[in-house]
Image 1 (spheres, rainbow, N blue to C red):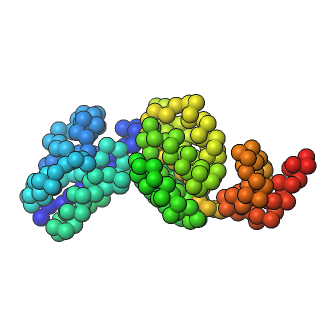
Image 2: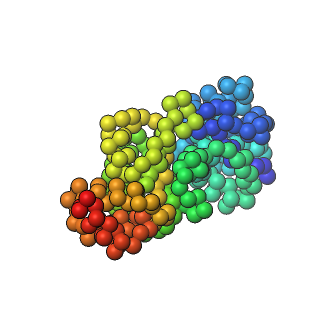
Image 3: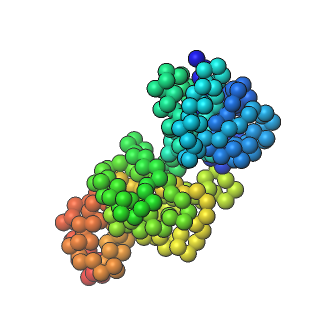
Length: 273
């Protein structure tokens, strides 16, 4: 029985590929790619002649069976358009099928947009929750956010450019005005890392650039105690929205790690000033 190699490929910069990954792509008999056109550019860059076949979201069960048959005699590499195959990626189906069939699955580690955005965010990394792509349906997306609203873990979310504003609006309404770091076009020529509060992110990306791949890193519930400046800013933004002093204090308490009573008293001081 042969091996299925899960080969990590660059998320943007084509130089971000390992020597082991290149060797594997040269040595296998076949590469199953999410989009053969994307993978072909990588292969041409490194003069790799291995045969390509597509395996994507709409691939039929028959394609899975064809690949399983091929694996009886030859090694196959599975790649996604960018990053590690199987992570928020249709390759998951082939991986599961190989495991059920007793075929050895061998990881060739590579870049991941989720981990890349997480480590540059400055938010806690000890415990994080990867949500991948949330539902395209607003109601389902909001339900998913509601389920994890009180968890203390840093959240990592993928989103398409044409839905990023809708996602941010749902995050604001369900999770509150949390700290957020947004990576756009990571490792590419026009890479952008944006940091601020959710409301500010909505304003920034409504008026700015929303092309490219987005990875959002959102602070968990009361994950990191805020300093007084951040707390005052959040209270003021809530009050500007017409929220009562009590509700503003409660909302910011859930985000900042401060006690609601202290925030209420601080808001009184702010109004006096």
